[in-house]
Amino acid sequence: MAKGFTLWFTGLSGSGKSALAERVRDILLERGMKVEVLDGDIVRQNLSKGLGFSKEDRDTNIRRIGFVCNLLTRNEVVAIAAAISPYKAIRDENRELIGRFVEVYCKCDLDTLKARDPKGLYEKALRGEIKNFTGVSDPYEAPENAEVVVDTASEEVDAAVEKIIGKLEEMRYVPAGDGRGYTEEEEEGIKARLRDLGYI
Image 1: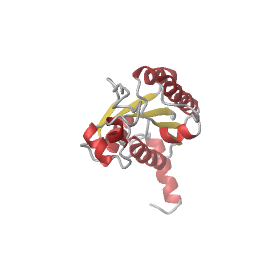
Image 2: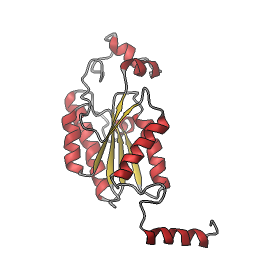
Image 3: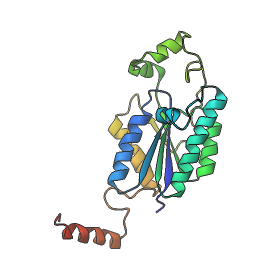
């Protein structure tokens, strides 16, 4: 079973990418995997400081995240990216670069996004007060063939997380939670270790 892969969350601002990424990270850590999360907002403060929101700068930002994800993936780390990543061509470029790449599309309607928006950014963008706002005055190209699609307006977080983990298990990127991802020999080794520690 390959240890390293990239789990790429894409979707509009407020669609739940970061929240889902954190929940999935916690589950994978519990299963003994090495995991790093690259959150779009944090990346912009550090790795992509100084970039604006032109198409060229957005592409550069997403390429940088893809570059780091590729390094992590090659070194047997699960890289979880949570970034709007609005343009399909750059997401596909990262998929080709990384290889072991799973795309999660966080789908959400505009009314729900506006209702969730504590800063009122969508309303400001709709009034023309914010320029180049993705999903309003700037395009967002939704994935056509994402491995996982979650409608965060209608699906509960737990159900969405379960769907994502289920797909990763199906693709054999992560061991199954009930132990099915282990060989009989590995299962016996785990049981023996737990017996030694007095847990069973």
